[in-house]
Amino acid sequence: MSFSFRLRYLLGLIPTAQKIDSARIGLFKMRDELHLIETSKELARYNELNNLIQSNDFQAKKNDIINLNIIGSAEHKLLIERANLEHSKPIKDYFRFIQSPDFNRLNKISGSADLARYFELKKIVESPDFILRKKEAESLRYKDSPEYRKRNDFNALQRSAQIKRYYATRSSDQYRLFLELDITEKGKLDDHTKKKDLKLKIYRKYLNSSAYKNIKTVEELGLPAKLEQLKQETNTKSFLEREAYLKNAARFETTPDFAPFNEFTRLSKSSEIVFYLKCIKSSIYINHQQMVDSKELARLLVLKSEVETAEFKQRIAFLKNKKRYNTTPEHATEREFNKLENSKLINSYFQLKKRPELAFFNQWEIVMEDNFTEHQLATTLWEPENYWGSKMAGFSFSQANELQSYNGLKNVVIKNKVLSIVTKAEKTEGKVWDPTIGLLPKKFEYSSGILNTGNGFRFKEGVVEAKVKFRANKAITSAFSLTGNQPFPQIDIFRSGNNSVGLGIIDQPGKGSVKKLVQIKGLNYNHFHIFRFEIFGNLAIWKINNYEVHREQVSKNMGELFINFIGSLHLPVNGESLPHHFEIDWVRCLKKK
Image (cartoon, rainbow, N blue to C red):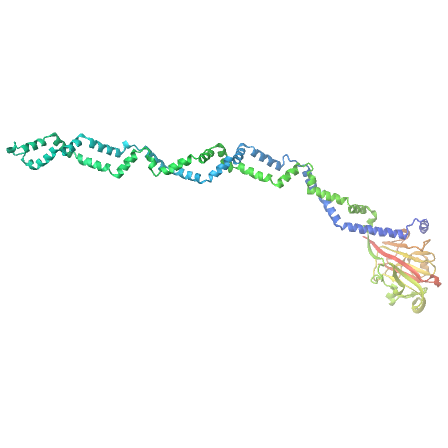
């Protein structure tokens, strides 16, 4: 596999770290762009509109609007109902009348004082009592009256021969003489000796005269008294007035009833009252009275009010409009949706959703990443010590075959977002581990650095990778490794050697184990490379620039793994080789979701 890689690498068939990094940056840029779109108001609105438009309710409503027809609609039925009512003869006559001058004239008269007075008088003159009084007054006849009879009796008696002779006799000289003789001669009538007495003869003769007999008869009949009584009665004021009233053919005009009757008659003949009375008897007025409170007119007025509203007219216009759907909120919703669907943002969203590369983020989770964007080392993640040395001895120490001391943060530099473990020539003091004796103090001519995540980050399965650059020579070692619960086994993701890198699993310390590593040659060490290690279960895979270069089974459970970056020196070097920079652009760890 290493030969295949080397050949492909030499032929340029293996992508460079820069290309892979650019692709990764592009991938993350796409991810960020997709995330930005996915959290945007525009996409939220697009999805909202899409769900709405695709819903059965929306489609049903759209179809209903498109299939609308004014014929048969509720509005059309109202218009037909109104038209039918407006064209009915009673309704037409009703409106023709109320729009005519006669209606205005009628209303004016209806509120007039003359009409009110007319009906007031009409009530009076048509009352039974008034009619009776008028009838009685007009039906009276003088010849049939007691006054006529009394006047006739008086005149007849006064003109009678008896009364005339009576009063003529009484005023005569003979009667006056008789009255005188009656005083002197009346007692002598039975005296026979006086038979030849002239006065007695005259007296006796007058007693036997027809004139005297007439007087006696008249007086016995009481005719003078009766005549006097009749004379007095027929000469009283009341009798004379009554007699004059009875003799007057226009006697009703003299009664108190005539004034209201005359006023009523005058008003009845006035043109306004005549018009009013004629109008209210007309068929058009009768129709008006029948319609004014009718259900038909009430319904028509309701319909007119309804169909004349702006809302109703808009609805009719809407129903008549064959392109009515284009005026609806639903169409506006579709326009908004189409505008969004054709927008650059939504097109970008769907293009991004089609990108298979983005499936990476559905499959993998970045659980640790350091791009060294800060000027100082993130000491919560990294410890600039040998993990096991610090854990066992409390400080870092060098191995017996190493010529450098570990100098902590002094040999770790971050510049331009790249971390460098610097191996340099300088006199230092430190500790060295001698397997036969133990820890010994030692003076060193060189210093370097080491980093681990033993206390900051560990993982069991997944992917760990780093973009690094170093010089591969015999003396200086740059290493990227993983350690678990024990110092060994140790997984070397890479360990630099003489123009090569070794990779594999070191089961135990010693040069022999290092020699068992798979050696990869032919890399251009002037460039960065991405070293990737994948571990799932017992299978471990090594990749360089995403190309698999080795795989093997992990025979021992190493527990949770942590990362080590190491710079070390095993042979003396000349000044030209130092300082050496083991450059780390970034490091990350991923696990499957």
